[in-house]
Image (cartoon, rainbow, N blue to C red; front, side):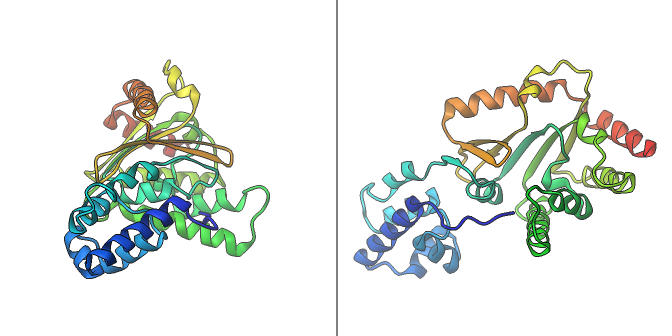
Length: 270
């Protein structure tokens, strides 16, 4: 997981406006923290632009400061845009999402990868990374997986193409342990894993992977990525199109129970 050199200027500007309005109205950071139900450090980070100011914070600050919509109006400028870095916008959205649905075409998705599977992939990145960078990225990927069992509970739905199970990453032993891990994780009540067989005519799947997210404010987002590029969509029309495609893919996939049988069979063949 890479870290961008700087956050979008819109985060810094909007955060600074919250701070200026708060100080002008005589509202303390502690009062804003209590009213918005964010801890002090989160409020400080959003005011400094280190973290994207949330719609909830803007709404609470607007009311406390009697800004009459001047603070909330900044929300339009915080909508996700195109990012060249995988982590620049997507990981922030993933970290706060209350619902997650994804289709993966060629690889086991990062949230479900074992450490050795992730290590194999990241260490083979081209151009090659140094040992320290590899270790940092593997650690970051493992840290993301804490959402799977964290509180509050988040609903996760995964559809994975059969190709991801057939492509041997590392050794057969690495793959077998990866598939066994999928069976274990799939036992969690908040996680569903489905397999899309290669012989199913899911033409929407040929366009590549897609991830759908729902924010705490119930905003719908969609994320697609390619080699070294990623786009996080918030435009309702774009999100709707990608949601329909994901729906078609999911309908063509095996059921959860059928998928468990499939994964177990592939694991036994390794």
